[in-house]
Image (cartoon, rainbow, N blue to C red):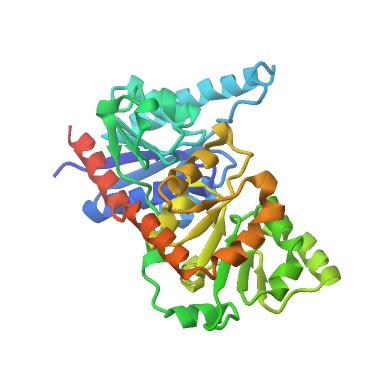
Length: 369
């Protein structure tokens, strides 16, 4: 059997890195002999996360465009892009892959452009319901475009689209501990409902302020709250809780290492609407309130959230209204067991449990060509 060599490119955020590593793992499941090389952007998260997952990675000096687009600084950005494309052509010639996968992020563009120019079949994976600029341009060159939402022919050639869903961390599905044991980990009891509020590893300012401004409502409720603040806001929140007093029914941490336990303990999840977070909520059938971040390209988190809201699979609160509305809505919703059951079931109906394997099989088909 011919040696299999695959390049996977992209990163910048966990939302790109988790799917990339999941795809690599699925390829290795199907072909344990496969050699996989990652290509990322120098100084970005993937340069440490990918080696930690057991894969080799090479970095490019590529950066994102600076807004406004007419900024003179973009001359330097474009210079780095063409420099990266030249570097990656050398990497591709040396590694000699049979297929290249792009998952979005700065490094995807020069890597897939270089691969296409060298006649190597390419596949892209678009995590969001509203395609980003990079993937829209790469869609014309990719032979397969794996998407997580219906209606993506707005952005890509219809005949190349495959609905696969987003690969997520599979360990979330295999929690050994029972729900009461998971709740106990966070100092929670099983006789009261649990809300999990998570804003990503760095945190989300609006979500954190929503809690700080509603501590009295949380304290007066018969509800327990697990609050991941994110490392960036850790000190500020500690100071505020020192002044205002921390309710006994509020568990506060800057980082949750066992998200599988946190999800299992929770009856309702409050989250941003990043593609990976939404895919995890669907896979686990978790009822949620989504608060899309307004600080992302093309407002894609709102599009992600509405894909669930329109299927009655999640509730939605605008970022600008969150401080006033989010906590009261959550405290009310978590006690409505019928609504929780309905939201959870509809979310589960949107899940793609075998996403990484489906994408890996497509990659192997391209490679065999």
